[in-house]
Amino acid sequence: MATGYVHGTMSRNERNRNADTTRRRLLAGLSGAGVAGLAGCSGVFGGGDGTETDDEAQDDETDSEESGDETGEESETRDDGTETPPPEPRFESVSLALPSEATVDATLSATVSVTNTGGVAGTFAGQVRVVEGASDATASFELADVGAGDAAETTVEFTFERADEYVLAVTDSEGETLAEGRVTVGPITAAVGDSLDLTENLRATLRGVEYYPMLVYDDESGFSTRTRLLAPADDRTVALLRFELENVGTESVRFTRDPLVIPDGQLYLNEVGGDLRSIRDVNGGLLGGNGTVTVGAGQRVRGFVLAQTSYEAARNGTTVGYQRDRSQTPPEYEWTVPGQSVAAFEVTDAETPDSVVQGSFDGSFTVRNVGEAAGTLRGVLERKRVDQGDNGFSTVRRVSAEVPGSGSTTVDFSDAFYYDNALEYRLRPFEQRSSVTFTPPEPTMGEAVEQAFGTISLGDVALADEIAFEDDSGTYSPDSGQFALVRVTITWAERADDDTFVGSRSFSIEAGGETYEPREVQYTNDFEVFTDPIDGAKYTYQRGPNAGQTVGGILLFEVPSSVTAENITAVWDWDPDFTPNQNRIVWSPA
Image 1 (cartoon, rainbow, N blue to C red):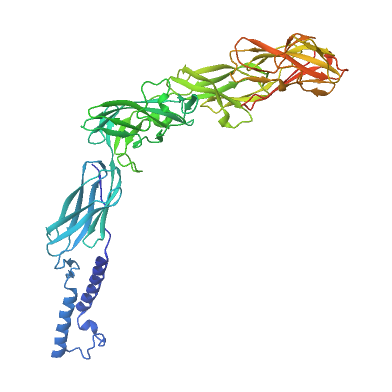
Image 2: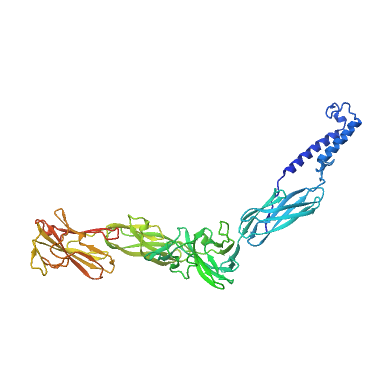
């Protein structure tokens, strides 16, 4: 195993000792010059004639003794210029040896080495401390009776419960750092299909990893079921992680998805716009619908966890980890996932007509598998009015198609719209869009036109100076001008909404540049039936549907006497309740 060493730097005491050594060498050089070498320099040592008195000799001896007391702990210089060790222990060249890598829960040996450069044996005591990383562990040590000139070492042991990058330091009894070393503590690893004991009682097996460009699920969180799509960004894919959990203890244990990690990706920890337990086209169920699953004593539980990661990680291989502390440090357990070929899709073409008359049309999206592996294209065809934001998209239909690697498929669709607007279409999860503008039809009197609820027509225009009703002995005349009668005919279709309501106030007629609204027939009830000039029930409103049934009635207007049937146009302005849609259809004279 590779090791790395970091030596200590020069201390303040070492710098002082070097300065003393230099001073002693200078004095020794002067001493070797002798008296002759000092001729003419009588003031250097304070003497006058170069001779010493007994008192001066005694003073010199005292000075020599005082000098010896001051430097007695330092090494002395021999005549050949080398130093003799000081008469005390001196510990230098402190180093710390660590493995460059270690594993969580395994014993890590840290070796401290030191050399005694002093003149006598001694003891070196200190500590090895963790100064960086997810631990504050400290281990004390002592190197006793290290001989003069000898090197010694000792080993202290650490066990790390958290994966991280750690820096360890050797400190002396005064807390000064003498050496440092770095070690990477990594996870306990296993291959896909193997088990790891996450806790004393909980054993987990990553049984397999599957990749899906996108997944469809049903959102039943509201008042109705909505189709939703689980799809990451273009350069990412959904990863489905299949787990088996086994409780090997005697009490129930809980497993949460939160500690799981996947490099270059993230887990879907919370529900994404609904309940992910209703994922379609995938065997098995979500492991812990609310993020937590309880495993009883002796029980085994299987399920999948959803995540997203990059296509590069899926192709080249990745890992799935589990963290003990849920922190930003690396995981303590890790499964190694080999790379595999994956499918990846992109839209290469979108075709819809630029403009159509209100009603149905055909369109298509062409999708190419740019990945190496065959895959299932799962998507949702959606539409919205162009004047709406992206929250306005609604589902037209789901899409599912097998596409070989490097192959293509065409998603054909038909849709219909019966309002004055333009629609935008997209095939989720792709961003490409295509728009269609819908124009109103231009029918003549009596011609039926397709609508969302079925068909509707206005016709049988009749003018009269008086009208008569069934079972009524009298006739009725207008307040002025003449009566104009128009028949409305509606045929309900299967596609009609139960709340469809077509009231009489949505109709009008135009003649000579003027618009005329339907009038109430004050002298009859709502259930009267016209007999003259045309037969039929009075039109008030229609609410559907009853599929296949034809309903309708007669609208009554008052127009000037100069108006003829040939210059009357009938208008229907429909603004359905509870929708932002509008429609205006004009029937011209036949």
